[in-house]
Length: 75
Image (cartoon, rainbow, N blue to C red; front, side, top):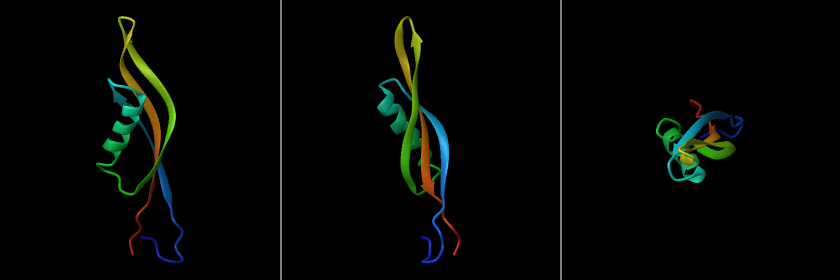
């Protein structure tokens, strides 16, 4: 955790999550995958949504998200 005088530094990464269920699930999948390697996730911004279509039906939902997290600093 940052000390009293040290500023908090946040970083933002951009990911695309996917799901056969819907855009909300696609965004949740992106956060779930990011959490496997990123600590201190504080927020997610839904940048946009797209979908893959096959035979006139949506077969995959995609959510382009920005995930923000606090950077750990060595003491």
